[in-house]
Image (cartoon, rainbow, N blue to C red; front, side):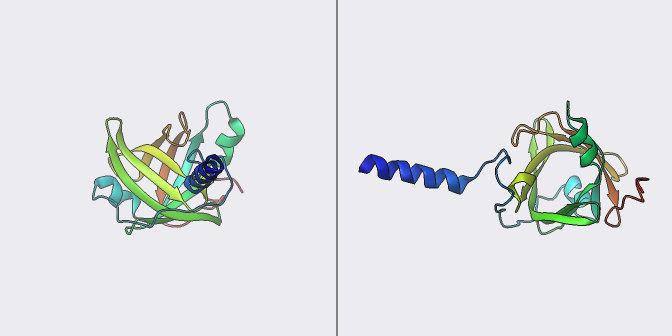
Length: 161
């Protein structure tokens, strides 16, 4: 009896923790927004839209092609909206951290499949960034170039229509 109760408690705990790899269902939850630490990257991200101009998933040309046009709109309060071209797909919270590898952007989306973590680096003008996926959500090797836009991206802007 006690063994069964312990097993049930473990299962409930694991279900509540979710799958940090993001390979589970397309629903979930995100932490409440907390204003990110003050840094150059925070100031750059918390303005307008950041759009994936180039997106590379090793050994997956289809995923690489489909990643182009994904966007994030980060807000100074630590919340964000995200989407792809003209569709809004998720929202949640974001934050900045620091490791030996560099500045880390952590994205905790309401849609757990969208949870992400990247090492980011901005160019001198602050209008372009490179983002490299980490192992936290099994995104090792994913690389992208994100560009700053004043409005939500369209396929026309990228020469796709």
